[in-house]
Length: 339
Image (cartoon, rainbow, N blue to C red; front, side, top):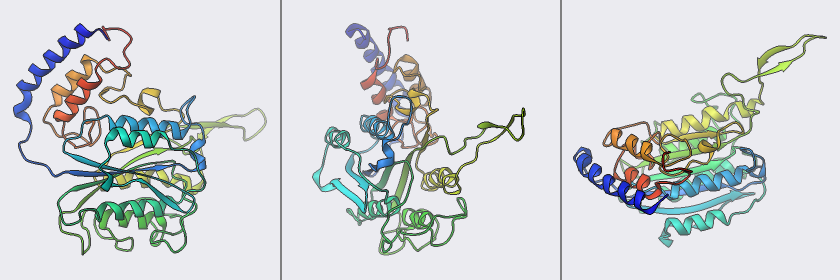
């Protein structure tokens, strides 16, 4: 993008933001603690969107998230998991910058088996026990392909696969325990989400964001395959999926919704601009331009579904951070000035 064109855009942006600034809430928000939890297990080496593995897509999604301007001061931690449990790559005490977290994410290589349940529960423990007596929003950002298979039997969140589908999860299943841990802080306490059991203080909030990278053996609405029941005959019937796989989409999306987080599913059929979205690209057309700025301004100060449209920083409100994200990335992905 030409420097002069971008200068004109930024000048208009400053004026526009000043005009709508009065719409934003003046209420001070608490700091946020974000623990990014990346699945680096062997299955993440499988193909995601054409030309990219699931791990590559996961890295791109996390990198884009780290370039978004948060609504409030934010501390970051970064963990990976494989084999017997999580690896604490960067903890909150390091006071790492988004750039440092991004570098660690991009240095991640594939590992072994998938202790998904135990790793999520360990991440929740780390979040709710970091500065536990202060009021902070806690967010676990999980990027995974969901194939739990190696959480140690004595782990607090170990369990069988649930036959029941969210929200009717089998008691003692790993899904039920992860749900309980994220909602109440106790893997065995099935209380309502957002009501943490003692010793955690009243008002503690934990948000679960989930990017679920899965293959097309999990059917989506409207997906069909051809079968030949007899010679010369072909019928269209819904795709079948393994019983365990069919429970994963409702589980991860349900967990995110119950904790007021954001869920995103990525398959081999997901358009590239949605699979690895640019920060600031509100309409997901692969170009951050005037259209995205206009969308932010039209929604500025409004409550929206978390992480949708112009709510890049997942606060549930289109705010200054979202606007600044467009400004910082203006022109990315665009081939002409008219886009």
